[in-house]
Amino acid sequence: MTESSIQRDKWNSKAGFIIAAAGSAIGLGNIWRFPYVAGENGGAAFVILYILFVLLIGLPVMIAELTIGRNTQKNPIGAFLKLFPKSSWKYFGVMGVLTGIGILSFYGVIAGYTIGYFVKLLLGQFDTIAGAVESQRIFEEFTANPYVSVGYLFVFLTFTGYIVLGGISAGIEKWAKILMPILFVLLIILAIRSITLDGAIKGLEFYLEPDFSKVTASTFVMALGQALFSLSLGMGAMITYGSYLSKKDNIISSAASVCFFDTLIAILAGLVMFPALFAMGMNPSGGPGLVFIVLPSIFSKFPGGIYFGAGIFLLLSVAALTSTISLLEVAVSYFVDEKKWTRKKATVLMSIFAFICGVPSALSMGSSDWLSDLPILHIGVLELMNAVFGNYSLALGSLLVAIFAGYKWGVKAVKREVHQFGNEFKYFWLWSFLIRFLCPIAISIILGYIIITGNYF
Ligand code: TRP
Image (tube, rainbow, N blue to C red; front, side, top):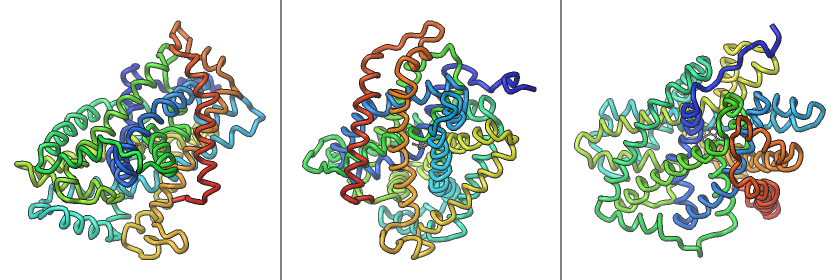
């Protein structure tokens, strides 16, 4: 059989693609990472910068990634090899595959905790919750147990591998379609409860009234990194998802919908978290434990809150799962397309690899003092992985995508691909300007600043 005679799997419909791509984008990045990063970086002013970066950098880069993917019908490495066989652009693809596994390894740890919390709530271990202090103690005790941290990481990666094995339309699309809308509704209910708590107003002020005196250079870095992370950009996940997109679909409106839903869910998660946080007198810069500490404290204020809480954590795990499958899928599609491995072999081996890479992150959440506070750097392994793979690598990757689409492949080639089947490229001039000038310049300034000042974490 020749390569072209093998029919590549496709999304069943445009709505299916949007939901699956939104499923990749929407995940712990929105509900776990966004509120805590916003909290640590000054609240509302960060949120405004974040939204600007989504519109001016995230959306244009997403359009570029989807177009490269659909045009080549390949994984990131294969895509660059197909367009420019002799160039070194393929190494960008290699970086993407590695970044995907890097993110998957620490993301899986946090995702594992969401399953752990689901089980914990169901078993009634939160019945006697006293409030924020107690929730914090429970979280720390939970993550400091190495068997729990590593065990749930294993469980989570097993689920991820299982779904990736099922392939595109049967696995990923089917699940995302059913579960993402439920998560949305539950978040709205939670936000309403959180906003109506006594003392919630201070949290709303923190979240919605910008104080620009709090904006520093690092706010820009964090907001950019968060926007790229949340939209799943900068490592070829959207190249891979774009490769399963049908030629009839309009890339521009698909990309815009994904950015819209992703931002909506992040903003909503902030509306759940900040009012409750201030109502309970907690510190908004609580770090990575934030959702695990704040959410259980809200549940205790609901009738039957424990079961409601269990439902929320279950859906959080699902949101995380629709994201982890996209991280794994990049590596798997590479080995399947380029190295001719079977899907099964690629999935099993890559899941095991991600698990091994994830163990130090899992142990850095309190089980090992050394891994929780690395010498010289003074941060834990999970935070280090988060910064290196979840921030810098994505910024560098997005810079390269912008240069590739804007100059190497060229904006005209992108336009041609978008125009297939009579689809329009609305605001093509604006997109060209952003991808050729604003994106590369802004990202370079931000990365350059970091390199020069040495303010890495
Ligand atoms: N965007 C996802 C989230 O917000 C995480 C994620 C999935 C991701 N795939 C990615 C991040 C690819 C960067 C690149 O949870």
